[in-house]
Length: 425
Image (cartoon, rainbow, N blue to C red; front, top):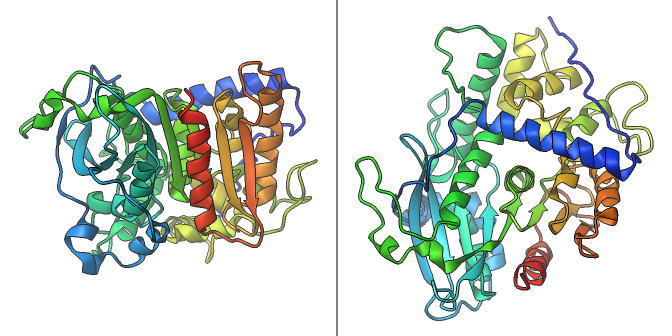
């Protein structure tokens, strides 16, 4: 039998700056709690070990769609002496995150360089970001790209035995829904949250390593990265770390920036959105007052990007197809607080005074513009009143006629944004 999820709190798009700022502080606390949920605070730097190159480069035949994400690579002039290396960071006991680094010849412990972290899309992996890493290195950044949980070299078989990033990821989302909506004695003390939150935790452990300047800690039973006697992380200017990402990676970039002030500049691409707006647009009257009504079914494109969990939830609720209340219920189950505590209208202002670029497609059905407008209007009030927020440090760039896809111009704009803000710190 279907049950309606409660309507998420919808903050006033024209609230005064102090109110928006207070809401943002609460959003940071809620997000950090949702990410950590009882995990102990890491003691000291993470363990590091060598890792092989991404599977997509060990087996070119497996690259497929993932490699098309990297078509910005064409014509990148990579400086001679650029170092491409792969390591793995221990993010939890027994859990390792593979990371690819592209280090320009200008970066060294004596002359550290700003870093740009690129986060990949759903069903992809860090191998698809290689071209972006090379472009970052050519522009003088240390390029950094990790595999998200259930993706790339961390992919596992799906519930039906299918392999690849998407199958395992969707199976993990279904399992998270089932755990949250049924009582099972086997539920772990810290149940996995594969939608957004666990990868943001992992990226925070990556930041722990990136700001580390004195060698690595030995892994449980694995060799350390011996070159950490002159640590790779010492090539990174720890006060100048930026993050961008594509689609799912854009969502990760947005939430990582909110949760961790070690991010000095952000530029999520086709990722920042309002989940509450998408759900509210279906309800009578639609949308959010003063932001635009949107259209019925605004949630459907986002649900279609990870269909298995919404199909499973609909079946559990006695429905043939998911509806808007099912969409809301799934979000509340697999990412508690996302709709009503740290959704973009609540959390975007928490990035202030750090530079934040939002890159959107004008016709993107997964990240509808009215929901982003809601968040930007609120955040602008805080950026406008903070004296330490430089002029122009909050920007929303909309590519007319573009759907949920990356264009070469978006990559160029992200690099220019990072160059503007990170190279002057």
